Amino acid sequence: MRSCGIVVEYNPFHNGHRYHAQKARELSNADVVVAVMSGNFLQRGEPAIIDKWARAKAALENGVDLVVELPFAWAVQSADYFAKGSIALLQALKCDALCFGTESEDSFDYADYGSFFVTEKEAIDKLFHELPIGWSYPEKMAEVVSRLYPNAQNFPPNHILGLSYAKENALYEDPMEIFPLLRKDQGYHDESLIVDRFASATGIRQAVFADEDVSAFVPQTTLKELKDTQISWAAFWPYLNYQLRANSLTSLRGIYQMKEGLEHRLVEKEADNFTEFMQLISTKRYTQPRLQRLLTYVLLQVKEAEIKAEQANSMLHILGFTEKGQAYLNKKKKLFTLPVAAKIGQKEKEKHFLTYRADQVYQLAHPREQTIGRFPIRI
Image (tube, rainbow, N blue to C red; front, side, top):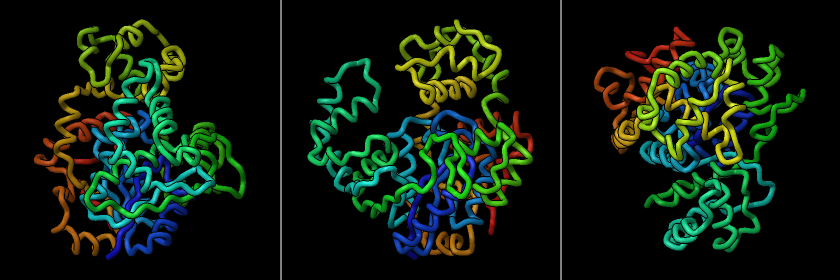
């Protein structure tokens, strides 16, 4: 069975995601579409608007055959680490192909770009560390590529994740075949909704929080869930504020990614809500996604040793599958290079402890979400 992997968050699952799953199958000639999906906290340091089980169910009803959870230690990370964990899981699942969205209208050879990072690693690392300290990671990487990559004129700078997938995929002895797909939805962070067009997840979330109708842009499963629950950072602000007030500066300094004295900035600013707090602490250097990831670590009291431990013990936690997905598991599971977990028990909880902790905290805002002992969804 030929399989195509996709890396997703589905925050929430919408019509553009259904199109992605359909085209991934078509472009790669795959029998099975396998999704590696973030859990209840996401790459940009946000809680998912609806829980991972509901998002997995929507995916399975709309073109995806198998959904596997990306552990917290990889999911709430900058682009390179997010890609590293995602590609590792797709490789462990023995996927033949990889399909991801791109905003670039021009053709771009992602496989060649990935190979460039493997063959020129020494020169890339050297130049990267010579660039000014104050530059952000994306700024440094764009400069490195513009100087060293021969096809830089076709470089799609806004698609950081796709480029990160290509780099990581190229490191494997048997890399997946890459199929970039031009996005049909609005720009990734576009907040507008246009009738009869695909809309971005950002635009849909903004519309939901404003109590606007999004029925034209999402399948019925998603629509039903959004009517019942909409989770945002606002629900966790009291708990985050408590952590910032109850912990000493020394304790906060031990939080994962707490660097450059950021603990002082976080405790010095006082706000009535999360939105106001973000406005007070964000700067050009400290972007909102970076700070939101840091605040997620504060909320969950995450330490670097815990991140490394969970990354070292990654597993394939199956959230759900269709009949085709189950057939793929039965045929390929003996070849998988990571252990498979059909449900989270005590043994899995000990290895997946950050993801379990994230689920427990998520339940503070969404009490019906459950992880321990829950079997995969079957469609």
